[in-house]
Length: 177
Image 1 (cartoon, one colour):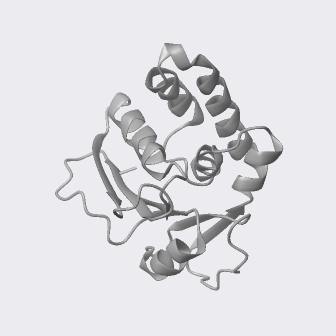
Image 2 (spheres, one colour; image 1 turned 90 degrees about the horizontal axis):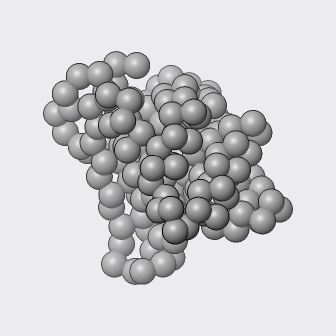
């Protein structure tokens, strides 16, 4: 990996920023150059949210991701907004529980996963973001699942150990889908 530009987008409250933080923290821990740039609307929940993450072997000139190599879309407005911004040869991973639209691009790799349904079916409500992150890791190999799991263990406070177990289960579900 020379440089990978990642854009995670959806509604506020879907864990968009946490997913980006997990990628950035993991990249940092494995020795990559990292930028993490969250962006969200003024609403507390339900507004727009996106997070730009760049992982690189060389210094990063700008944290702006205008042409992602990997787009993770958690809702239809985000998919529609960034669909044609994704680099040719890039990857688009989207939540097919919330997005029924079929993607018409043939110059990118498309992966869909019913992340929200899988989260609900497995007692992991609110962790669709981690499930879709697992799927994105499997499709891109930008970081390994073991690297992310190790960093999730460092990110989740000890007093919330039950959340760590749920996050680890969620990443596995997405990765193995």
